[in-house]
Length: 426
Image (cartoon, rainbow, N blue to C red; front, side):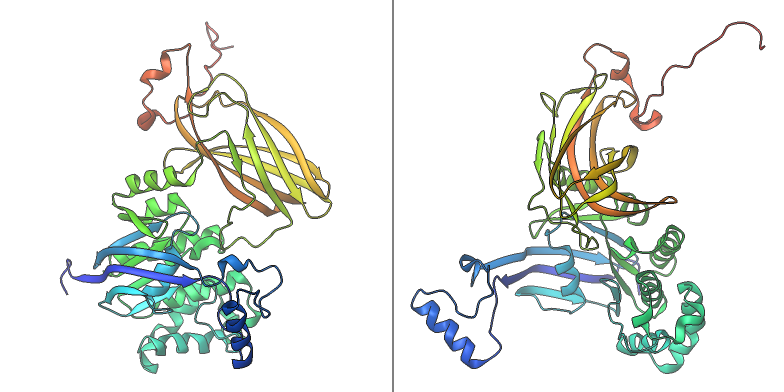
């Protein structure tokens, strides 16, 4: 097999879904629904609150996606929620079929689309390893040869013969990744698999995927919202937006393209209908909107304080609440964080304004995230809400020093000048 051998070909792939409930489960209810629509009446079998305008309409999750991947490439696939990333991976792993277009895979595929994918909850960890290996076409002897290595890497240890329904989400992820990484396959497909594991295991997984591509010659497709991980692991980046490929090439350029579509360039952002990431399930507290009180986010004076007005909604009384304002650079690398703690939110709408000092940052473009957390004490906390903020530009109207600042060599943060005392050391 040559290094330039083609492993994946996706040609003009489209995936269309129908919105609304399709089929009532019985012939009688289907006939009732059809007769109601025929007469222009409301469907008697629809769920309460269902928008009848959406029934029967279609949605293009993917709309003409084309690309190729060669042996040994590690390709990052990024895009906002709803861009079509997970749909694409489901097509590549034959979970569902495309509505149009062709997908050719030249090798066996090991995939991990979400926690516990391919695992039977009643079977033990060991039995699930054999099941996944059999699906890939491996023999019992081939799986036996890999078993010790899989168990050691997963850190499951004595729990390998316990039904996986008793595993924590972290144990699920560790074993599932270990199975996908060690069984004989030419193509690895991973969808945000590192969102659950601890930091030590995340690093081990990244090293394993890097080794799979660079040393073992496997093809790796990796979806993540963590741009530093994409930059660290991948040597190519595909950006999806509204079901189409809008960029395919250099990783840094791809990340910059993605971030330009992800963050708002307005001083007001409404999160009422913002779709949270798939790994995020909590809904007790939600950021409703934020208002950055500046004349223009395209020209914020770096020496002046920035005031942000927050509107949060809580379903019930919430105490020990914190809010993090996280600043990132143009490619999404975290630079600095300002946090406030000890907030108490009443049921319903809560409003407050915070003032931030960004003067340590040099002139240039930045973006940010907002995170709402609940502090449990002892350094532990739970994430209540997490949303992308705005893209903003810092300027310095009065000083010329920052105009020649070398951000790549010196970084985007300028520390205050030191206090100097002349004379001999005391």
